[in-house]
Length: 194
Image (cartoon, rainbow, N blue to C red; front, side):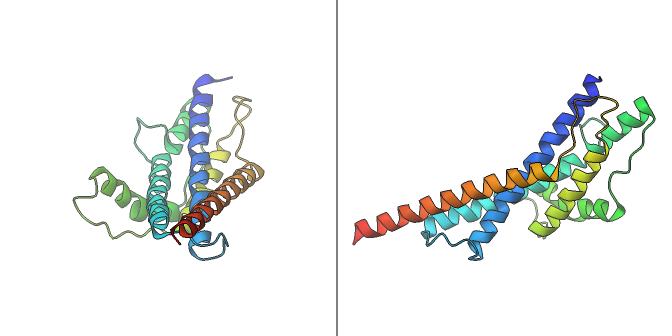
C-alpha cells in the first residue's frame, strides 16, 4: 500500500465525480429549459434562479476540469500524479490527447482567467457547451482510470460507468422532484391571488 498514491488518486477521483454531479445538474436544467422535462410552469423568478444556477454550475464544471488537467507542479492533477507514478514506479500513462490539450487551452483556460479577474477585466468570448464539457470529462475519467493501479495500492478503484449512471439518475430524479415542487408552489400562489 502507498498512502501518498492513494491520497492523490482519491482526491482526483472525488473531483471527477463532482464534475459528473455538475454535468447531471446541467443536463436536468437543459431538459427543463427545452421542454423535455414536463414539470409545468415555473414563475419568472424561479426561472431566473435556475438560469443563474446553470451559469454557476457550468463555470464550476469548467474550472474543476481545468484544475484536474492543470500542468503546475505543486497541484494535485492528472499530470502530477502521472509524474509521481513515473518517478516512483517507472510507469508512464498517456493523459490527454493533443485535441484535449487544445480544448483546455482555448476553452477552459480563458474561463479560469475570467474567474480570477472577478469578471471585470475582459470578456473572454468563450462559450461553453455542455456536450463538449461532457466529452472532455469522459476523457479525464478515462485518463484517471488508466492511473488506477491496484497493484500499487488495492484501495484505489476506477470510476465505473454504473457508478456514474446511478449517481446521474439520482440527481436527475431529485432535480425533477424539485421542479415539480416549484411548479406546485407557483400554482398555489397563482390560485391564492385569484
